[in-house]
Length: 282
Length: 282
Figure (cartoon, rainbow over the protein chains, first blue to last red):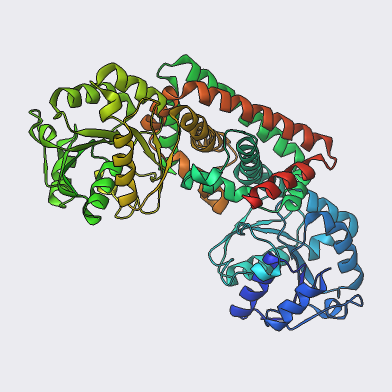
């Protein structure tokens, strides 16, 4: 059990994390900081955290383990603050959706990054944001990707991995490069496609009231487009090369499908069937 | 209450329909036909249907209301059989995913189509197919699109609409042309995109065990790609013009997003935010 865990950024994810740390009894004290004072007040009232910092970062300087749960656009400032105030034995992780850029940034700003910072990415979340949207069991059984570099301290990797396992998560260790490639295809591109599909529908003048015409299939992908636009912008900018390459692959695949629909022969049926068969085996 | 309702095609959808007709007490007897004798036997054992036809179509010729729940590729043969055996007062609907082609086909094959056939499309379903996958409440609260032509008999429209309302569905009446356009954008294209995204991931050699890396976002869209490949091929062929045009729109939209990611300015953030804001209002 940690003496104190510090959550830097207290939105929906940070607050859900605090709740799970508490229910799994992983820290004696949970502290937090957020640029929004009301979020901190809410979390303290709800007993998600024990206390919160103002600009003197008193609790930050006492904490053993710091978890960044903030938009990736603010990491530069946060890394600088942490590096300035943290005690030398404190370790740091984050929950950001891309990893290579963040690790590069940590090397620029944090002293001894290999010994104190290790990137994590829990594959969990929901569309609503803000501290009041926190969930009790958001991290339960979630996959967490932990992304060390070649130089990461082995004890640090063990500590961070153990933390997530104690949170009842399933930990996979991969490189940040592979992480960003995989996530580009399995998460970032699908989210962008959701925004694109929704935009096409919203721009179709003959569709006046979309709810009159839509069932579960639409709701599933439109759900993704309710996600926070600022966060998705950050993700795209932070993983732009992989995302551009994924978009190119999808355009190529869609062009192929279009040719098969136009050809009106058995090629589309074979294509769909081949994918379904492969997927069913997974 | 109908004396007898006849379900032509007894897969997951047909069997779920039978179950709901029974629980809503909308027919004294439910009969069925399917090319797979085992499906019929299963449904009779489970008391989803009262009895089933063999090739003499005895029950078909007695039934008041016939609902086609078969793959669209088999409609020509089914329409011919129904036209040959049905009694003159019997009415017909279907649950196929495209409507214009089906209505055109009905005009070619069925006598007095305006008086006896009206297309329906319940926006409900699931990925697993086959009679044993039937669900108790699949139709409960589903949107059903009913697609009359200018010449459709008004009493027929009322009867079919009333049937779906009695099934606890929400009925919207639209033209088959608008139906096929809307569904192309809200359902057919998203399903094809799911197949395309899954194919990209399956073809990425560095992704060995996809389950190690994926959370809810992936499962949501991969779910769609588990759908029946033959059915989706039928849908694409039957709504090919709209689908080609939808694919073109998506390729254009993805190219636009790619330009915004490449530009690394605020354009992507504004784009995503505009879509989310519009969607949240819906």
